[in-house]
View 1 (tube, rainbow, N blue to C red):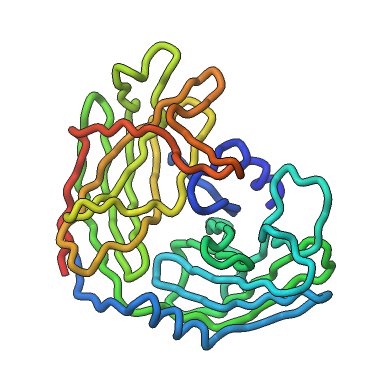
View 2: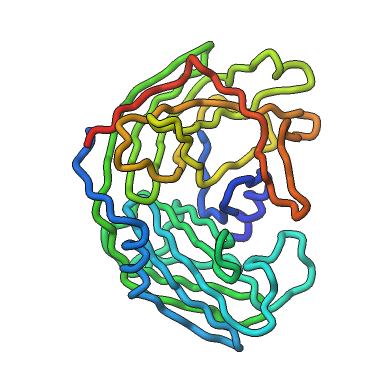
Length: 313
């Protein structure tokens, strides 16, 4: 895990999650469904809340949600004299008691080497963090073992809880392709639940460059927005910048916010960012006084690569 963590620092994370991945790969007919509200899902999962206390610090799994695409766990922290942030910064030198560190996650007692997981601070609750775990091999029902180390405390915070998949998922396998100027991509599947949307696709070819992405500037790898039939862009859960020239083959598996139950179609809008390869700075990126990214950069959309996908319910 330490080697993998060092490897992951070679790219920049600019979206909501700071991913700690066990594996990162970049080579990279609908059904009827029933929406349960997010509030109902939270209420059901809160019944399974578990708490562990060590050395004056208490951690509680206040919410555990599994929708068939990813496992989301809300971790609440309590105690006196806790540091302001839930996680220590990468360049922090002094060890302060109370920071969450890289956890160990077991599914039915086994570790999945191909799984990815991210740990981030909760946007609305000061002393809470959200752990998101994704794997193609998660069963519908399993026992979760979570071992969470905390800085300044020798003993891990260990939780064992039963997890069951929530009902309601749309599975779409379009196998639709778009091609322009030697670049093409094929959408393999789109999975939609009440809480998020998964987009899986394969692409190949050199990324096309606009007139403003020449000379000292260049395009990044291809990224993909999802826009519903009301014009709303779904927020992407994770967005990463790689400090290197884009490859020619990618397997993309990304999560976005959920579409509304009334949505009948979505449009996939491929785009690139513009960078200066001399220092890999991103044109249009904006950071606030606390170092938080408020704008990930200026997007260049490729209109001829847009794809509309109908949602059959």
